[in-house]
Image 1 (cartoon, one colour):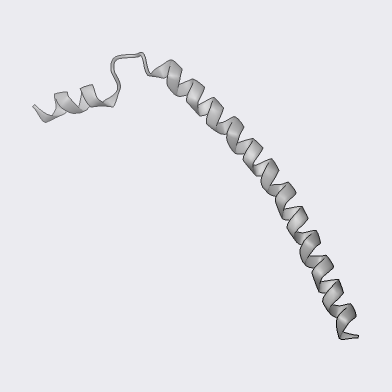
Image 2: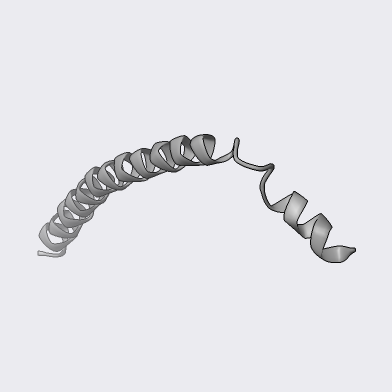
Length: 61
């Protein structure tokens, strides 16, 4: 009887691990898309006026 319970618990753990890994693949894919979008937007905005360091230098004078 205990052997069957242990086998059932093992099956549940393996099933849960498989589900978690599938979910983590989707999370990783979404984060990759967000990272690429952020990288592309930062690349476009980086050429305007030199960024925050220039403004910070003016405010310290």
